[in-house]
Amino acid sequence: MNRRHFLSLLCAAPLLWSQKRQRDDAEGTLTRFILSRMMQKALAEGWVALPIGVLMCRFGELFVGTLYDSGTLESPTGEEICRVDFTGMDCFTFVEATLCLARALKSGKPSYEGFLQQVLWTRYRDGRMGDYSSRLHYTADWLEDNERRGVLRNITRELGGKPLVLSVSYMSSNPQQYPALRARPELIETIADIERRINARQHWYIPRSAVASVIPHLQPGDILAFTTSRRGLDYGHLGLAYPVEGRMHLLHASQSARKVLIDKPIEQYIESVPTHTGITIARAVEVA
Image 1 (spheres, rainbow, N blue to C red):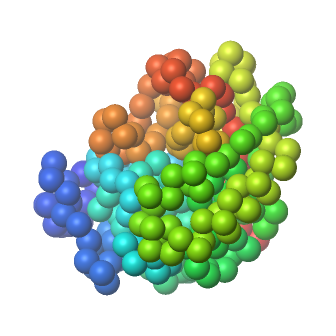
Image 2: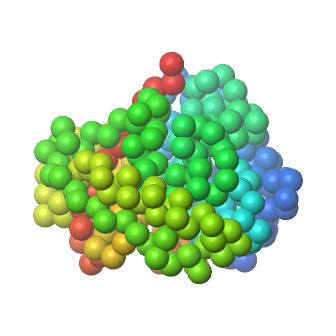
């Protein structure tokens, strides 16, 4: 069932499905509404018993059709606030939402507050929100921090992954692109220090030419981080492995399609994007 059908059955506001996005308000009224209906469906159909990766896919299905929007986490003043907005998503906030919805349901807290607790735990370094630099901006940092705390397991190396040498610098080199860094330039050096720590760690990826060989080992809901050739960055995109008739497709918030969708098979998708150089694969860990 796609998101439009799901919300229509539950009498959601029609503007949520229109081609023109209706932005949420500061209180998150629309997001709270959508989340409550998702959790009602999940509880009624016994989704809590599903493996966490399958559960992430089920929640991901309900977002299909949601319009693409970047920058929903940013504040022009530089103040860090834990924002969530289900009326528009980019590739990271989509993956984050499916993971945190699944974790909230599995932890016995299927509410907006329970979801927000999981967002705080996964979005920020050591699960603690401080200033702008406490957010795990780089995907490599997000993967490492959440693996260290038992949220995810990076399975890339065991699938035959190769060492990935990173030289991230994009944020500190382009602070004008980030409202918080424009408002608080004293944080630029803090970000640069975080980048240096990321670059000093060991990372792993499956090269583009070998991606097809690991597809049979993927499970529903595996998080796929696409490495990039773009200078100063670590990854260029995120999505979920999603089974369709025996093949693993990509379920993601697509910038080119401007919405969340179930895309082509993974090996075909990566070949269609010249800047994607490979993938790193993380698997959600069941909630204890």
